[in-house]
Image (cartoon, rainbow, N blue to C red; front, side, top):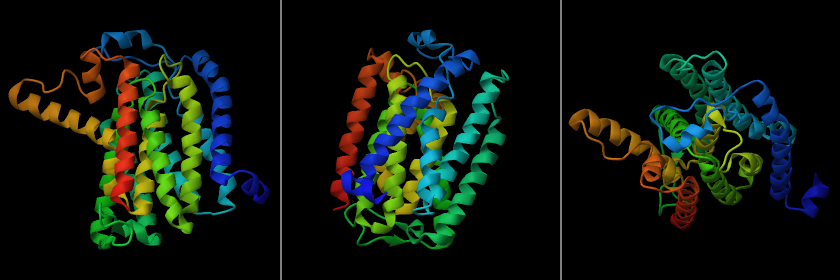
Length: 328
């Protein structure tokens, strides 16, 4: 390990190894998913252009989760704290996999029932929140814009626990809503992970979070080789719930839950568009957006998938830069 660190910065080496593992995993798993007929079912009410995607293999989140599992275990011998991030990510992935499996293989249209999914998500969120608030001091703090890391706001445990549970629930669902176009959720999440790689350099005790970010970002980039338009595989709930859980967990461990709402502005806007659409339609019978989540609104405006993904990713880059400025 020391030899690698001298030749190449460890994060870059990890990023490249994860990227390679993900690309190789994709070459092996995508044909297997096709043979097993794990194909995506496209909603009737969605954009007509999406109908051609019917049958595209899903559950592809496994492609970038394999490097997380392999490299996460290897780096746990260097710093065991990384296991908390690996386990919470894989636990969310397992919930998503169960949902995908029931919908695709067992032909249950809704997958897990809302009650089943809520209970599973609460269990995983609850266990991680207990761990974080008990053993990680930053989990009981909130870093605010302009105040920065030097002046964190301390929260009592009775407040930090429900607040962190809310963050876990909000961002797992937000990333899930964002995963509606080829390459969108992956592209946005890579930028968010790069942002966290930068801010985690502030503290030596956050080196394990830096490594985790490199592993996950490299894995996602390898996945995007197959997921950018036109996608050859979708991440499914297997991938989107895992990404949402990972991002939320990182923000809790660093006390940057409020900052995540800025950096992850696309997640926030996608979620708000759905909430606004539903509430306004129930009250007036009319729609604010042509279709929600927000990315579909722009599709109906005539934007191509590639344009939407490019613009949303660029907005995330700007949001990440703004977040860095606010933390100075």
